[in-house]
Length: 223
Image 1 (cartoon, rainbow, N blue to C red):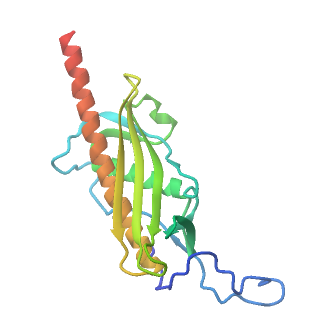
Image 2 (cartoon, one colour; image 1 turned 180 degrees about the horizontal axis):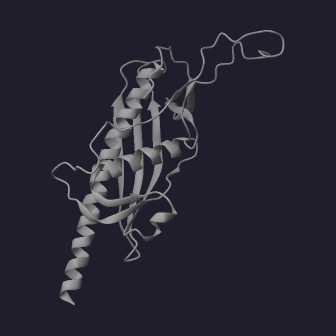
């Protein structure tokens, strides 16, 4: 992840120096906009840790959806009174939906919990389907100008394609305080929150899928 040089945060758009910058020889004094990515820690793909089962089944991750205001490449923040705003001087490397999908696909595959994980039409024959909606992913300020906390909330649904039914709906929430009111620190906290949430999601999906397979096997044995 590219953490920018320390920059003081000022929510909203940087307007100073931008007007007519290319028309009359004026140059902006604003620093160049930084681009950030979300990544999981480096892990050995296909080597699951103990405590959560491996599932002898395939999984399709549907493209995530997002609440209004989050399906953007801008880095969101909330201020007292539930006011939504965005940081100046930095963006995600793509839309939040796109980078979340990439993070989740990477996490699911690296975990080794499922036999195969797909994210496109090739996964239409997968045993299970995972849908994720982004409810929150922003830096939340309790006090204007204070140090924010990264807040994340994913609403998730796991379904069985073979049985044509929803297995479970569950929420994943994480919170990670930033170390300082600077964009680099805020992005680091958001990444840590996303990493923790992805780990929770993978483990929960694997446990639910394994339980569903066991139920199906038990039902088949009683016939």
